[in-house]
Length: 223
Ligand code: ADP
Ligand code: ADP
Image (cartoon, rainbow, N blue to C red):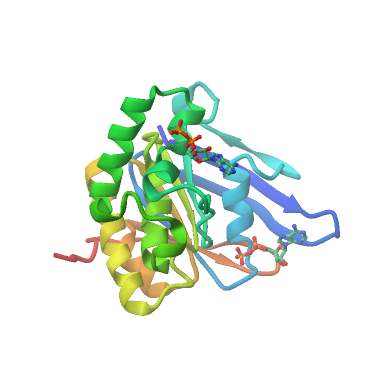
């Protein structure tokens, strides 16, 4: 069964903007799917609806593998919303605190995630002491520390320079291969979508509809 199934998903904002219309989409469990399209075509709106952060105007979103209830989700935004007064490791550990995980255990797991994103030496640094790419790594580590089944990423690397962005693409792929979550990645970069995904769902604007659904036969290699 797909991890999530969208049926006739439609969103009209209060001001009358029809952002998404009649979207049908099944996302295979464990897959890496990109949602590609020009700015304003409704990609973020779809992601927010999947995350339960924005109500649907019509249609439905089902989680067939979780008895209809949403499984654990991780979210990565373009702007890493890190707590400036907390160190990198405390930022990563924060979601575990909210889950009530004991201190020693959350420290261990946060440390492990920081190692995985290559920030072992920066555990005690504050966000302001880190580069944009490092802050994004902390943000990814924080999103994955609770071991979510689905990771939703909304243009996470759009503000980073090209080299950093490429490195982060590779890091994200390694994490996906080792941690086995389902990734839904919103981007307006054709390169990024093809490089990262097994499947590219293309959206067209006015109003946001499915334009094409492309399987990517062999993921591009990055070793
Ligand atoms: P994308 O992520 O593809 O850039 P969005 O989902 O952000 O697209 O936006 C889709 C459309 O909905 C755009 O026309 C945008 O201006 C509009 N929109 C997005 N958020 C809101 C909002 N909160 N209120 C009204 N219109 C919105
Ligand atoms: P721990 O996880 O070690 O139990 P916290 O992560 O809550 O502790 O806090 C780490 C440090 O950040 C503590 O010194 C705490 O006082 C400080 N701190 C936590 N929340 C805030 C906040 N909202 N504003 C300022 N300082 C804070």
